[in-house]
Amino acid sequence: MTDLMDKEGAFRFHTGHPDKSGEYLVISQYGTWFLLRWSQKHGMWNAYDDNETADYGMSADEFVCYFDLPDVKEYVHERDD
Image 1 (cartoon, rainbow, N blue to C red):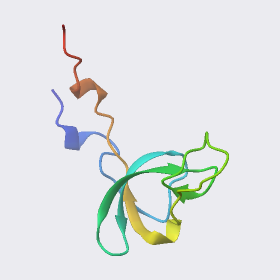
Image 2: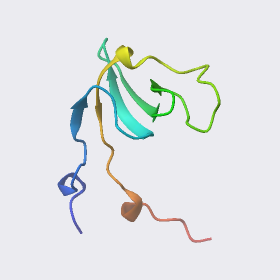
Image 3: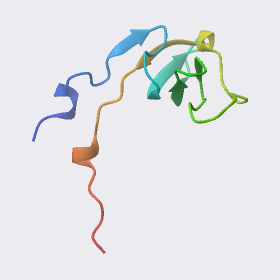
């Protein structure tokens, strides 16, 4: 079994904002960590491309960096009933 940290792109550090919509681990300008969704359509955190408006979106300027999250699907197993 491959170690999770050896996965390509796992926990890679970036500044600015992502190029594509999705969920990321972000650090605010105050040093707090959040798991937030980035909306490429709205150019905001905490917003969804499917929504017409980003009423609860947060400015990209609120956050100083983000991390790509690894794909952990192969490590998660559904419980058999």
